[in-house]
Length: 128
Image (cartoon, rainbow, N blue to C red; front, side, top):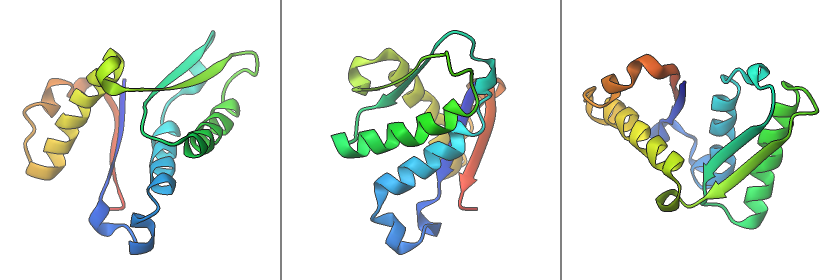
């Protein structure tokens, strides 16, 4: 299933526009809270586009893992891998999905979005 939150940058407070890590983490949290992690039974591996410096990466991982740990069995291992999108096929697939969502909101073009619409479990815009 696919989960998406699109950030409406025009409606974000000016002081937050310059705190990209905080916004990124918060929007990621909005998506994470929609995913039914309770269904995970053996292992959870999250792959994220590598874009953060070590300190921000650690803060992001802690933020996400803290939430997920409250939803799954403590025996289940959790890992978050920050990888380069041009080297990781999973991230390339996500980029295609994101392109369809971008075109939907930016240009009212649903051509690509409709190709995977049946796989979308959650799609929202923040702030409204």
